[in-house]
Length: 60
Image 1 (cartoon, rainbow, N blue to C red):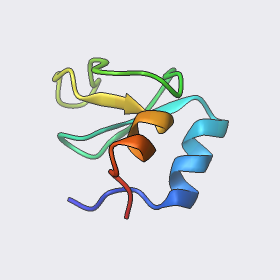
Image 2: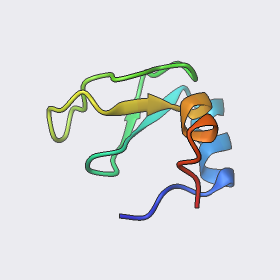
Image 3: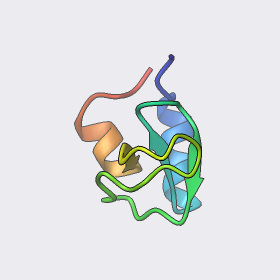
Image 4: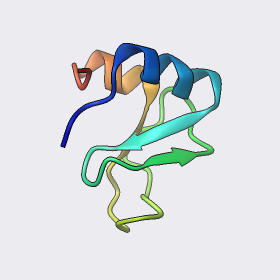
């Protein structure tokens, strides 16, 4: 799985979206500091907001 680009992370930040580090799906309704939200696609608690993605280096 490829990590999102910095442009995609900025777009997620603008749209209050998070990204699942397990399945790679984008999820709505996530603050930038979201941490371990439940993914609607894979049901795992692996959705992170844009700020966490950048801090953790999960960027392509």
